[in-house]
Image (tube, rainbow, N blue to C red; front, side, top):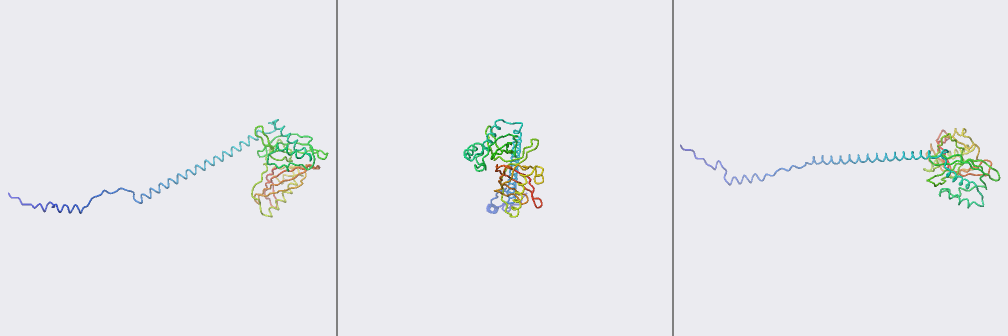
Length: 318
């Protein structure tokens, strides 16, 4: 049997054809598996969002810590004030405090013009260093005949001693009641404000007066300033001449000197606050009624506008 002859050139490529096809195919490179632009943007957005949320969390936590610290400070101040109020009073009288205050009162209200410099030097050991010597002078010679400590209490957290005094001026005795603000640290004591005339403290009542402080931007409205000035002068004139009941129509927590003193003058008046709620600070000079004894003291009035006049919401002295 004869088989047909096959031409291998038609079945298998020649070496020349194989080389040509190999060159045509070129080199096959593996595809790189990287991030597309869209994927990179999504990834970058996620990172930025995470950082933003982290900083928001830190800010919220910081504000919470700050708020808690402020609350703790407020609670601490209130506790300190309550402890201070609980530590003073007629039931917790300290003989050391009474003796020291008695020496101050004796030095302050015994005044002789020819020994005024000596008296000022003696007073400097009792009073705060920023109290001016000129504020401690007296108008006439006078002598302290009697002094009785009525009690110790607080005025806006400031320890205060009240004395009933009998002072003789020009040969005529006169009774007066004064408050003495003071500070205490361990066994050290300092008078932090000038003694001021005051109504006798009622041991059954609640003392809630703030100590004198002057701050704030001065009001520039001329009409408001004139109206407040006029009211302040009228109020102080009423205060020195009227009783507690009479003053109830003009002020909260009413009090009055009931004619025990006369208003000599008001100076260094400063009006701050708002037109509807002005705050007045001033220096006043009072004279014990029917005597030559004059008393310099400071006041602070917090007012509230009512129709065409004002009402005193808080009255402070120092």
